[in-house]
Image 1 (cartoon, one colour):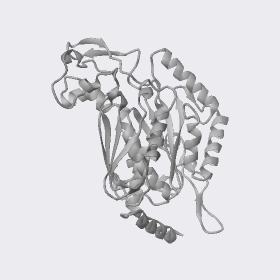
Image 2: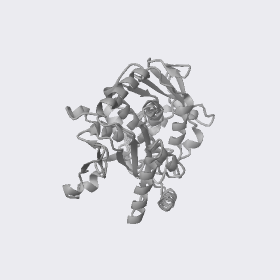
Image 3: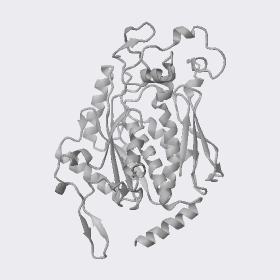
Image 4: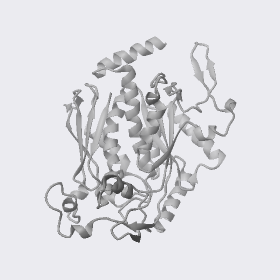
Length: 406
């Protein structure tokens, strides 16, 4: 099983990651990982930080001549802001030594509503909210994208591909019936192409907001411009799709091993994501059962198939062979350029929340992060069923299972 840990602060020297359990024999390169990192940094509405950072991962161990050895893989992404001559992060976030002169006046004591500033201080008894700000920052997800890229590469060997696109930003959404029908046809056509869900990601990446419909995309950009002008932020909904999944990943025998539960936890671990659904979950809640469950049919060759996929590829916490569909709702970012009311913990008086350099909208980036966290969950379910210590061994198990099902 793949396990991983991340470390590092938003403005610290670097983000670190250690990945254990990746089988030997997997071809992986920094270039492959960095392509995904670049995708995470794109999107209309990102802040000035993305102009400073040019995320690139360095592989420190666990890979030899471009092939995994089975040993833990160590990754590092250096923060360029740490090295910037115009910043003092080296002094403010120094690992050793005494605090810089005037540090008492630099302590952050006014929390931002909706962020981890205050709850972090309450939990760990900080007198400087900077500690909460740095680790709770979504900057940490850069390393999770790097780690998830390793899992993604593993899945692609077996024809499993992951993609995503944005469904809505603010009020901009697929509201008209004909636009929703057009989206469904587009997704279906892309899924039937070679590499399936990967094609969806490729098409979405052509849009500044990763929205497949140009009219909805234009509306979303207009919404973001409005938020930016008002010093506000916007959230939205994105969809992650996995194609090529074999039936039988996951299990219903224990609550903590159900794939739907594991996927939900992974998606909800992305900062600012507050809701998740599988398939048409929330719409299905309004319908009669006869309009919800995917009927089963059998073709002339004796193969069982479904004409619909309202379940989103999972039944009873187990993949059923249909594309996996997950949707996530991301709240507006908690840092506003026109700050909300807060309190100053130092003097116990009302105050205006502090500003931190931030994005106006990060839904497109969150969709790419969603691909990566889903890749890690699916890779573990895949290894649980077809596991082995090397890619060659997994291929043998995978083929034997397919032969058995046929």
